[in-house]
Image (cartoon, rainbow, N blue to C red; front, side, top):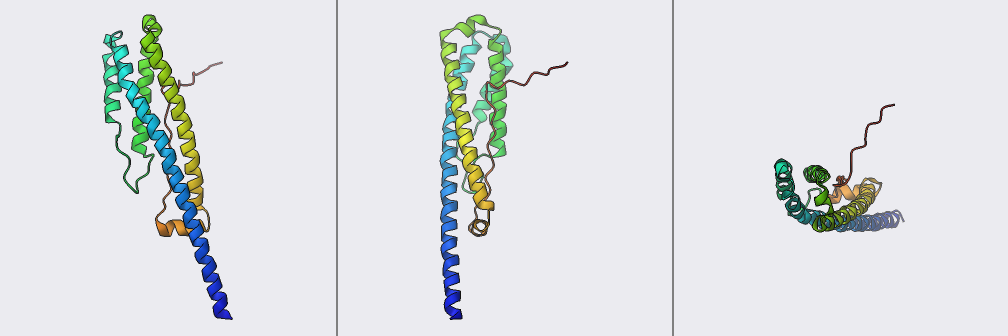
Length: 190
């Protein structure tokens, strides 16, 4: 009797472990799928940077430093997926993308001084595409962060945390990237 009871408990624990493992795998795969959406939008953003720099270059020759920084940061962006076991949204990637966004904001600020450039059809088309990419990137980032939240909750919750630690599931970081169109909040003094 005691042996059959122990076998039933062992069987239930095994079944629970299988369900917890499968749940963790599902959440990890959702995180990877969500990351691919972020990666696509980052690639689209990077494809627009050289075109934006080229359009501005002809009108703002004296702003060469900003153009060179934008081009350099775009070239430094990682082009390969993270290796297995490393976080998808690494701190290095986030810092690089945020530096690129800051330089793009500087570039767009330069455009403000050139009304003929702002009114140009090629710039307006490029700006519209950049706005669309930035909006899509923000949506992809929110979806990714939501899947990471669910995955991390599964990794840290009992009893799936026991399976997660035994099977090597690790916490994934959230991805915080700035938009090229975000502006600093103005300081107001009363």
